[in-house]
Amino acid sequence: MKNLFRLNRYQLNTDSSLTLRSGHKYVILFISQGACQIQPGGQACIAPDMLLLKPGQVVSLATYKSFCSLLSVSIPASSLTELSDSTCDLGQKFQFAPYGISVVHAEIKSSMLMQNLLARLESLAEEETELGTKLYEKSLFTAFLIIFLRTCVQSDQVYQLHQKKMLIIDDVFAYISQHLTEDLSLEKLEKKFFVSKEHLSREFKKSTGITLHSYITRSRVDLSKKYLLQGLPVRDVCQLCGFGSYNHFFKAFKKECGITPMAFYRKERRQNQ
Image 1 (cartoon, one colour):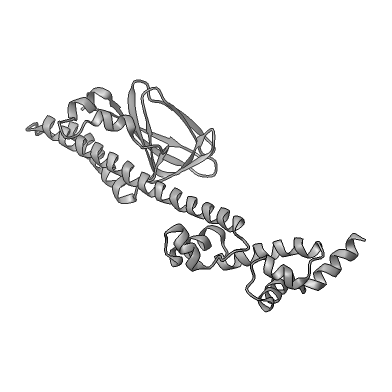
Image 2: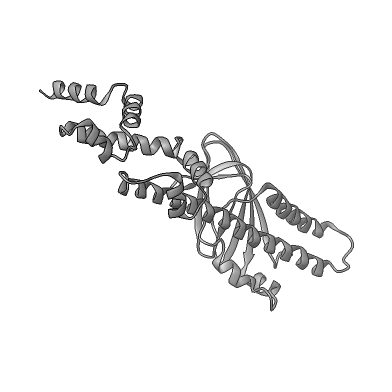
């Protein structure tokens, strides 16, 4: 068993730190309990998160107002070669894992399954029956490695989906800014970004805390203030800022600013004189 991998456990108390070096091995680090932060940078790791250190890498972990229990699995590259077959080159898969993310966000079910497999492997040394022990050990550890790699893929898919959603919202902001005086109905945005208006509204509200309609209205009101201060007639400002009607503009302006457009103009002129 020692030839395939090595287990270590670490306990970080409050306001303590730990530096781990992978050396010539791969190291999978489980956050079994509690939380810690990667230093420098302060990226949070919370159970059941995992970290993967490739050969030659170093990680420093620190706790502040919490403790952290860690389980480390050191894996020589030779073990990955030994357990590979024609359908899966584990050495190659680990070389690219975890697919561009530093922290593997595992589900509790997957993390517990992997840790249970490790506990079962540890207990093999205490068993009296030796029948098939080496083969059994290889099977259990291979299953552990495959589950870890699958968890990396699933974690990365969630990460990429989150990044895609954030990218869409950023694109929406840019589009609104560039086309503020044009038609910005949900139907128009739906066709522009190839997502349903329901999904777009939901994700925008989740990201910003306000509705898409409120953001557009607020942006148009802010633009109208600039035109008003240039001395343009209120009805012209209404058209220039993309409001469908004077009545809509009047109500939106008063709701956002607490005063009418003309009252705003007079107030600003008095203050600037």
